[in-house]
Length: 309
Length: 309
Image (cartoon, rainbow over all chains, first blue to last red; front, top):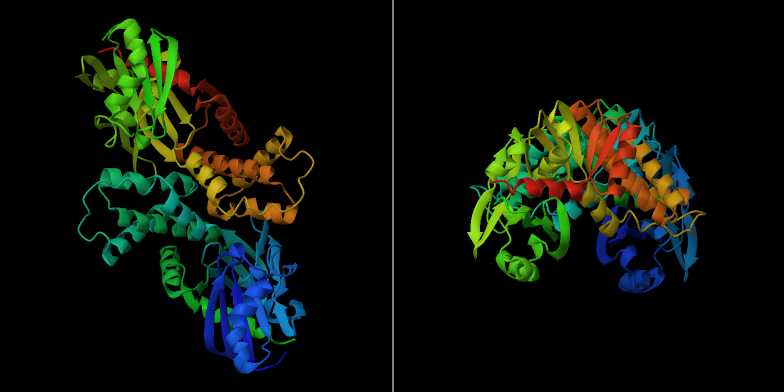
C-alpha cells in the first residue's frame, strides 16, 4: 500500500472529511455525514463520495481514522491498550479489501486514566502519530499533549509512547450549556458598550478564566450559575456571557488537568487556530507555555503513516 | 393580613403550586404553569385557579414566593442583600392589592458568593424562613443549609441570618447530560444482572460518589466521560450509567462545597425525601452528618410567615 495517491478520511461522529492526497499534498476534499447520522451503509457513502476521484485515477487506497472503527462504524477495530508507540500505529491498523479497494482503519487507544476510570480515544491517536511525523523532536522525552474539541483529550507522551490520557467533556458541555440551559437567557438589559465585539469577547473570556482559576477545591458546578447572575446583577450582555462561559469551562479544564499530570513544561496543543489560542491563553494564566499544531494537518500526516503496511 | 384562611403559592420557573391553607393546615391544592410558560397575565392565572376557593370562602389573602417576584414575573421584588435575618422576611415582602385581594410577594436574596461571583435566590429564602419557623433551634449558632434541586443552594446561616450562599447547577446539569449528551447513548451491551433495579442504582450512584470524591483538584469535566467509557469498556447498563452520572454530579457538588464553607458540623438538607437521601449519602461519604427537612413543608411554613404584616 505504498502507492503515492490515496484517499485519507477522518470520520467523526458528526462529520466525514475525505482528502485526495498525493504524498503529503492534498489535491481535493469532500465532506460527508458523520457516523452518527448515516442513512446508507458506510461503504456506499465512501463509494459515492470518491466516485469522481476513482474515475480520474482508478483504484485508490483508503486510510481512515475516528469512528469508522467504532462498534457502530464500518468495521470495529479493537482499542490498543496503552502504552502505545504511535510511530508503529500502522502495524495495528485493520486492513481489508472492499470492492477491490485496499482499506486501512486506525485502531483506537484505551487506558486506565488518572482518575481510575477507563479511557478511550478514536481519531486522536492518528493526530498524535501525525504530530510525531511532522515534529520528530516530540518523540524524545516527555510531553503533555492537549487536543481540544468536543471531547478534549490530554495525552502523556514519553519517548514516542502514549502512556495514558484523559478526556474532558469541555466542548460538548459548553455547547449544551450555550444552547439548552437557563444560563444564557437572563440578559434583559441593554447591550453594553463593546458587547458582541472582539473586545467584549476577550473580556468575558478572561473573566471566565479568572473565576475558573480561583475554584480551588470548588467544582465548576459552583461557578456556572455566575454566567446568569453576572447578566442579572452586573448587566452583562448575552455575548459577554457566552465568552465568559467559554472561559469558565476551558479554564476549569486546564486548571484541573495540569495538577493531574504534574506538568511543568510547555503543553503541545493540537486543534484549529482559534481553539488553540483559547487554550494557550488558559495555560498562560496557569503559568504554562504552549506550542500550537494544526489539528487537521496532524490528522492528515497521521493518516499518511497508515499507508505504510 | 392576620386572617386564618389564605392562599399560599410557590411559583417557580416551571411550576406553580397553590395551597388553600387554614393556619398551618393545607385544605386543598392546585397546580398551574410556571412563570416561564405563561400564556396569560399572572393575575388571570391566579384568579382562574382560585375561583372555586373564593366562591366558597370569599376574599382570600395571597402570599407568594419564587419567580413571581422576578423581572419576568408578576411584580418585580428587589433582592435583599445579605446578611438577611429571614425571621423578618415578612417586613420586606412587596404588598399590594389586586382586584381587592391583598397580595404579598417574598423578596429574593443576593450576595457576593465565596467564589467572588454575584449570587441570587428566589424562593429558597422562604423555605429557609420556614425551616426556622418549624425548627427554632436553627436560629442559634451556625448552620450550613443545603437546598438540593435544579439549582442547588448552599446557605450559611448564623444566628438566624443568611450570611452568604452559593448556587450549584447540579440538577440542571444532570438533566442536560441525561437527556441531551453523548454520555448515555453508548450502551450496546446486554443488560447486566440487576440493571435497572434499585440494587444497580445503588451501586452506580455509589461508584459515581467514589469517583467524584477522588477528583482532588481535577474538574468534574474530567470525570464525566467515564459515564460513557464505563458502558463501553466495563459493559455497564444504561440505567447504571444514569445512576453513576447522578453520583458524579451530586458527589462533585458536595465534595466541592464542603471545603468552601469549611463545614464540619451536620448539614441541614431541605428537599423532597429521595433527593435528601442522595445528598445525605454524598455527605456521609465526606464524613459529614445530615439532617433532613421536607422542602414543601418548609416552603409552606415560610409562606405562612409572610401573612404577618
